[in-house]
Image (tube, rainbow, N blue to C red; front, side):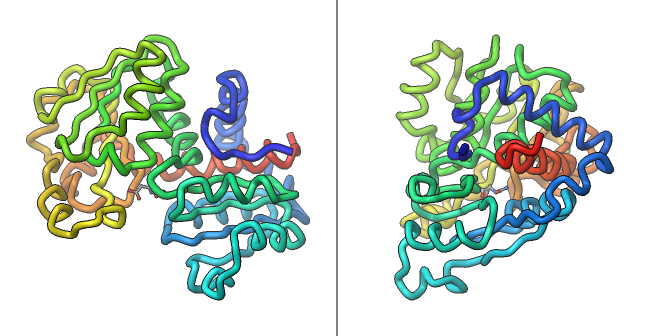
Length: 304
Ligand code: NCD
């Protein structure tokens, strides 16, 4: 039985296969609409989410399956003191597969070690968010036609932004990838990503503070929000939250083929006037998130 705890759990070949399946689902949704009949997906969300939880549910429903679950720790027995290990043993009796989001790093891994059904990490604290990464990879592959030979700018909260950590982990395995890491000093990428992932793989990267200067050379600009809930100090959050705001004017610095991605939710970091720019693909990205989660469910349930 397989779980998805990190994008590294799949080899590049397996990822290619999964993304290919997602693209086929996009083109031929009818072919897949009964494949999960009689199967149940549990969504165990100990932390708020709109997109991730609903996109999992939408994915399972589009495959003909059913869904059950909870959307906050307060609505579950966690509020009575039940451990993740116990909860997953119970859920294993109710569902065929589960997606778990938890504020503590590593919680889905603990769950996987006690589970008799596949566990998908739907975001663990500031650590990883592998299904957002699958979404990002499918978006880039579908709209750029490749996952190699790319210069990717990652902008915003690179310290706490788990989507960024997972995306870097996944992309370093493709050829000729380089990164421009754009953040205030306080929100720089953690050392374990800089040293163990970027430097260990000899990946070219720069760390800069200025967004406009970085933009002209990028193929992809991945914007992120400042992760308010992971700050210890509200004043620090307020000081940093509006450091980067992508406006229509700033888009003049970008080349005509640069794509703007964002895992969403957006706060202030992309002004709404940018939404009409054909290079802004963050709402398309949401749709790719459903196709890729359909592909993931089929793969982990070994139905393809
Ligand atoms: C992201 C997350 O939860 O890390 N959201 C998402 O799942 N699309 C990004 C964020 O919350 O900023």
